[in-house]
Length: 417
Image (cartoon, rainbow, N blue to C red):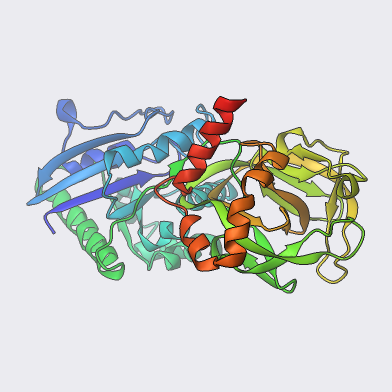
């Protein structure tokens, strides 16, 4: 393997830029990335630099600090996702940058959680922990404060060591002050870990997820529905033909089963903002701001729908408990925005379903619900007659995860109105 691409992620001030320079062997006036001695964020946008060193063509991508003290959260996530532009074929490893000598606090745990939102479980599959400030370890060893690096690892809280376990205990202690041949051993150790990662994943590079700020999309990958009214299933695993818990026509009787016949969106390698709605009974629903939800005490009877962005504290939505599956109203206690992974929008024959225990429409503001339901009538008829053919026609395509004809349908409707 003579060419390697890595992306560095971590909090501001953890030494990502210095690490990039050390990996590339570029220092002083020839340094690849600008670093700040003040601990403030120097990297505001994702950057890629390359160099041939030790017989390997290295491509290193630096990213803005996660949970940056200056940059806004959404902008930071968007900038990190721009790594896709620098590595269309993916990266060989994700370097989790943590400074030696710092206690792993709740804030660090939260930042790892944000990174997991960005990268999913692949964060650990492709992850290598890089401890910067290795010179401080050398000083601690000389002063007799530490005899071995494992002593430092054992002094950290359980969550920290859990992260190390999840990455297969792949880590490298980097002294970014070393130059020339003195820096070569730590670089070679990194290369060995990268090769181990690629061996574990069958030499398949990791594709950075895209940040999508779309209003009329759907639910995230781990939102759940009840298959056959009994078995929780994540949205990402839902299949055409599954029978899921849905809403009765009169809004009073127990929830019914309805068939998933179509996905207007199905994409996993994206991250997006979602409205998080929490009810008095503890139900928590995430949906795109342009997705419709039943709101109002009589909403299930009248069919009253509002977009998620219109829901506010004190409003009434309708929920379904796992045991007593009769929809009933519950007050909204909290409304927030969160970043989640995946975009999925399943459609049932009746046009409604229950997601995370909350009654919602299958439609978004892309096209008004009554109009959309009418326009999709041919697809429902085809599904009833020839479900396999309908499944092929409705198959999500491309990076956007949408059927091609759905975009045409939206364009035609927009032109018509």
